Image (cartoon, rainbow, N blue to C red; front, side, top):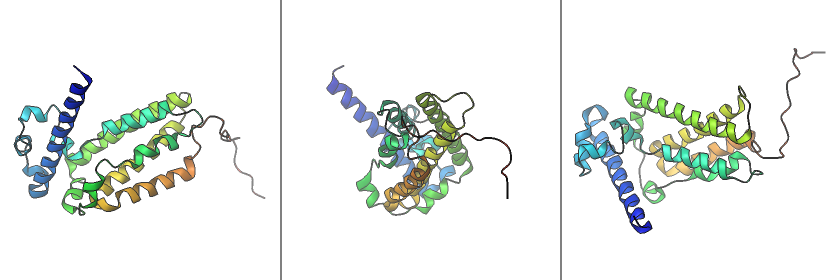
Length: 216
């Protein structure tokens, strides 16, 4: 397969995936999650039901859309950065990236869709995904900085980064026109405490000396 053919195939797959996501969102908006089947989503997107399962495991995943690819981008940004670059600086472009800026600028807030985030099956699926992504990110950070077993810092940093992504993801539904502004604010809050984490040559943290503080 030539490079041009591979590129065309990748674009077609992305178009099909996006068509399924948009079809699912239209139907969920009209009928709610429980009133929609996978077969109906596939029909709305003009594909066969088996095609749906080539992209998503469940109808909840179609609502949640993309995610694994963003975590992959975060991990790659950490792995490939200059060793003097702090981890948060390296992942910032990925955290702030908006893949559909023009469509989002014209998209109104959608309470019916944002409320679906609290649907039991979607909330459960989302927790599974966040936990998996946090594990993957924490592992990548630990390997990158050479953290020892039991070191809590990679997990804390991973939790902070995934927390910022969660805020941006919720904003994309609840306040789509302010999505980037909210994501940038979340990043600023992270930066206040993690701005130098993972940068070679940064000041080592102080180790606790033990014992209770003395009061005079």
